[in-house]
Each structure stands twice: as structure tokens, then as C-alpha cells.
Amino acid sequence: MTTATCSGAIGSEAAGAAFKDTWTLVTLQDIWADIGPISSRSKERIGYPTQKPLALLERIIKASSNEGDVVLDPFCGCATALAAAETLNRQWIGIDLSSLAVQLVLSRLQKAADDGALLASGWLPEVHHRTQTPRRTDVGKLPPYKTHRHTLYGQQEGHCAGCKHHFALRNLTVDHIVAKSKGGTDHIDNLQLLCGACNSMKGTISQAAFHAKLTKQGLR
Ligand SMILES: [Zn+2]
Image 1: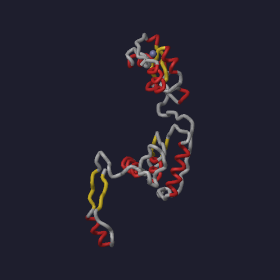
Image 2: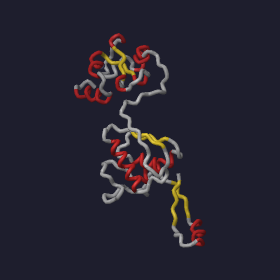
Image 3: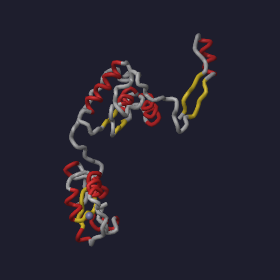
């Protein structure tokens, strides 16, 4: 990717012609120092602790997508990436754990519209807010999940995926890493073998919470 810098100024058409000659293309380096952090007095600042500069997200989106593409931000926070995507005429999907996130997204887009930044669409987009757990639709019809027992036993070399103790196959049961009630699939990537004690500890909690529990109890 390149960025342009210019040492001249446009004062007239003639100056404009000269101006063309003064452009130099500079290849962006690994460290981008030309976009500074948002200052405490910046109009852009909305008070969100991890807010990134809009110019930074605009550059990333421009470098990696075309108009009409879909930008996905699975941790959309204060919606800087979504505002940048909207400004650049991309479709977008934002995901956030916080139930308040949608209000933040809407107010951020409203602010961008008020500032005249939404030049591409020119108006506030219609935002669809979904609260259902997303489900994968790309895995097709899957075999019964228990048929993966032997494969999982091989992958885990006979160890429980929780406490790591070795067990005979008959003592391990197939568990969904993301519970089916929370959108998990029967795909082998979402399966693990657990011993009885670990299986009852896991229940439907997340894998991260399960590991935290095991660590707290000194079992991992
Ligand atoms: Zn175990």
C-alpha cells in the first residue's frame, strides 16, 4: 500500500500543474506513525476507552476491501470500524457482547451523519439489530456427533480435554465445546472428550469459563 505526500500548494491552475510533479509515493511501513491517537480534546472522541482513530480504520478498510463488500467487526465496541465502513460505502456487520452496543452504534452513525462524514450513503442506514445466537449454516448435514468418539480419542491421545488425565475410551464422553443450546454445532471442531467429572463441571458454560474453573480447582 502507498500513501501520498505533497510538498506544494495549489494556488492556480498553473500551480496545479506544477503540483502534480511534486507528489511522491511512499510505501507504508510496518509501523504507521502518520495517524496519531485521538487527543483528549478531539471532536472525534466519544469517551469509549479503546476508541481507535477513524482515519486508521478507514485506511485498513480501504486497503482490504472494495465498495459493496461486507466488513465484519466481531468486537465492534464503539463502532469506529462500522462508521468507517459506512462512510466508505461498504456493507457491515458488527457484533458485541454488550446489550448497549446497538445504542452506541446508532449514536456513532448519527454523529457521523451529523458531521457530514456519511458521504457515500448520504443518510443514516437502516440498522437491523438481532439478539438471537448466530448459527453456522455452512457445515451442511453432519453425522451424529458421537461417531467422532474414536477420532477425538486419537486426537487427544486418550486424555480428558479438561483435567488432562488419561482414561480408557469408555470413561470419556463427547462434549460440545460451545453448547448446542448456545449455537454450537455437531462439527468435530466443536467437540471434545471429557471425563465424567469434567463433563458435569462443564455443563453449558463457555470453554474459557470451564478452563478458569479447572484452574481455580487446581485441576489444570
Ligand atoms: Zn477430566
